[in-house]
Image 1 (cartoon, rainbow, N blue to C red):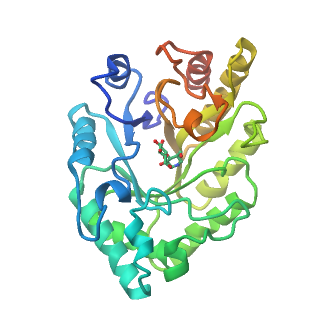
Image 2 (image 1 turned 180 degrees about the vertical axis):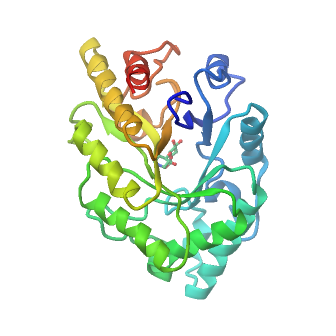
Length: 321
Ligand code: 9MR
């Protein structure tokens, strides 16, 4: 990836080395992995479980692991409706108070890791599937200004970090994609800076009970990326996994390889796509089977940490670029 001008292939990081030496070996192999995104440890519920009560032990361990092993660090995520500490909603705060809570959270968390997070997912998943605003506590209390304000606070807290908006189902180049591109203009209209849009890349090999549309064509993927890069920001596939109805069959695994190849090819074909991050290493540790019953087998290494055809699909896309 680096030889082809990209920054990295990354993975979500969960630090379970006592149990998983094979996973650790893959993540520590610089030929495989060049960046990590702490999977849960930097989320609001983890770092500020009570108002003004910050807990950084676990987050520090993730950040230190990345720096000690020369992995570039994507930090995730400052403002999100999910995995939010319950007190933020329960307080029924007014506009001014919630802005102050958001400012204090961002200053404290992004400030602590200043100079260490190469990228920050500042706001995660602010829109609904139809492109309208998600009715999060932030939107309901502060209005659309919560988004540019979050970017302004993040830039003040860590001026050198690249600031990202991150969301799912942007790959289909439909209304959500178009409205997300409009968020770039909204952020800038407040005088704030945005550097990138992350397309999470939670996709499906085949129609499943939770997602009827398989991975789009190369043409559609490329067009979705251009919606953002045409506005002068970077893009990355930030949380890739391509799931299927389990059990996996050899045919489905081959089709998955083709789809991984397509996703990575679309990134290789866009100069402003900086790289890809897989949402984990092995099918043994993936959020999918816990969240979507009967679905899984979404990653590039199988349950035994053996490379799947998907791995070959990724590699081929990089070689062919
Ligand atoms: O992988 C994460 C899983 O361990 C958590 O339980 C889950 C809680 O919602 O979040 C998962 O990661 C999410 C990411 O932070 C944002 N995009 C969607 C991911 C999958 O839910």
